[in-house]
Image (cartoon, rainbow, N blue to C red; front, side):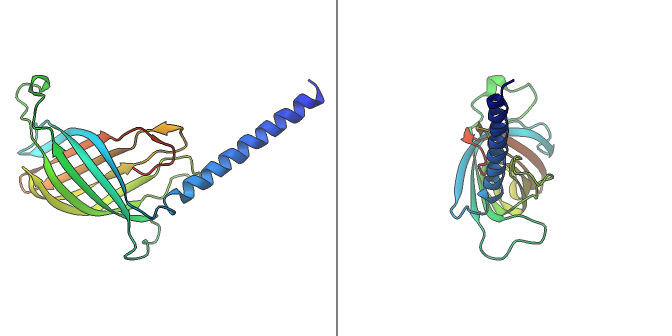
Length: 192
């Protein structure tokens, strides 16, 4: 191995480390610099249900909007906080031929709103996707009525492109449903 090859390999390794550290810095500050609302549309479906909705199926679009919260400083141990609004648009149960027998289809529609806070990463490295916990959300969802909502929203991490995803549990007076889905293809270090 020539001296030039050794120097080149050291420079390549150094460049890779600097690039990773730079990306980690971008990831750590990506949500801190977000000053405007981010809206994404997720293709979702009912994952499970309880009570009256125990065997329910259904597909929907979720229009999710995250707006930076400036009302109060973030709670201790919690990352940036966002106001979250999820609007659900059921598909009208148009895919009846694919629905298993004996499973009722729900056309789910309505809006819930609440607070989403960034969960501190398990590792202090910025290569992991941003995870947001939705809490204290509520709203009116047809056919469930008034619901409380909680869930998890996951952005993208240190990848060239990926799909953010959303999971929400909606609990009403007659039962609950869990819904989940994926968003559009976006770049790395994106919000959900």
